[in-house]
Length: 618
Image 1: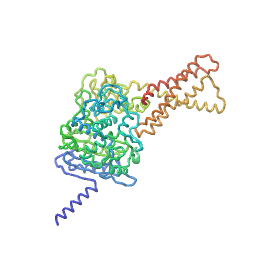
Image 2: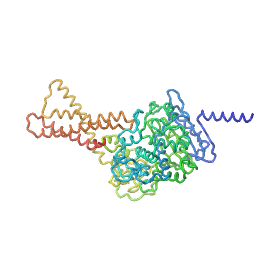
Image 3: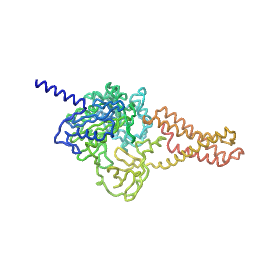
């Protein structure tokens, strides 16, 4: 009878754990960086969730060490309007945490001797696969892992909102290939496209699709039965159905707004499409610290994966760990990755020394709060030991553009939104847009203070570009920034004036009071089409920004419009110049031709300055 009662009691405990979404195991003598005993981590997270209900709509989290799962829990509602609670069986999107499956796959093939980390990846790709390369230098897998293959951000859309538009990985890569802006190995510029290319290399070597490879070599060995990786989640029926229940929310200061399901399909799926339960994500994260290294035949392979593969300039401060990033806390050095999609955000972090780690996924806010509960405030490496002589005080001043932003073409206008104006304040100190202070400690080493002190490095590339880098974020000194802004500003004013002038001419035509003059038709046409250079692009950007770009068909269409406008501007400029110096009695007042020459000259200069023709890859 006692055995029966114990069995029933055990079953009841198990059911309680299942339906409350909480699992706790005790560890008396171990603590998190914030001093929380392992046995109390669940209580600490639950306390934070209870005290901060406005910080999130729903999130799921799990905490582990190398031996066991310490805690997992689900909070809030996946659908607030219909009162659907989040549970341990709720699925969320990993976002860029998905890239860790790529780097694990790469190291598995390296371990098998099928992939050389330092070989040119073109040796594994179909002939002529890469078409937008600026340099002949080899692009290695290490470059892809370190995000320093040299690619800027692309213009073509990385995801689609109609499942019928999903294409295979090879086609998606070729359709979205960005321009190569820097020589491989010289500039760290985070690249979704580069990570997806690495995944395609894995598929080429393995002789199968990347999704099949991951299911067979990562998901299956770890028992991750509730995780999908394909853009439409069609590789896991459970995930595909459960993803329909998840809604995304944003808070603009007036409460949480429902954005709907935010079901978008990432064609470059290895870079950010993994979706699944928190339990499966915890299994994956724990595999990095388990003593039996379940995804590798040799512990040395895992050890290599978790060692630095790049450093901050010529310092000994690690930057990338073969595609993983580092956060430092008091007594803990965490490796992992953060991620975000239109609908979700996620974080995976672990300490390879103690084996302690956590994962969290959310449909709204809350990620940072959960991380800070266990780990506190990051402590960044101190670079004062690298202080030396500053040979040219004030030399860092200027306008910097984010290397990850669009660096070519008219979308460079939107890339300007990531610019970083740096002004010299004296005593080797700079102000960055009033939001941060930069202290130059030597010609190359700096520290940036903004809610913490971050190590930074400044240097010149082999092409002479000045780069200011903060690890995974780099900024390039942009000497064309001010001229571009000035020309763009003049152009916008001219466009506004042109609109009113055209309206005036239309009114005059209706009233039959318009006095024609030689060349007035072409000048009027130039005024009429001036908005056509900017308006279509702004409309496209506004309508398709959630897809992170536009289609090639849209791009070629706008290019055609812009090319026609450029021809009209050039023809009008030439016609106005001819009219100005002619003795034709039918010509109008000289000031009209002078204004036309100046206006069309500015228009042409702006288009060329912003490399309007270059962006479409024509």
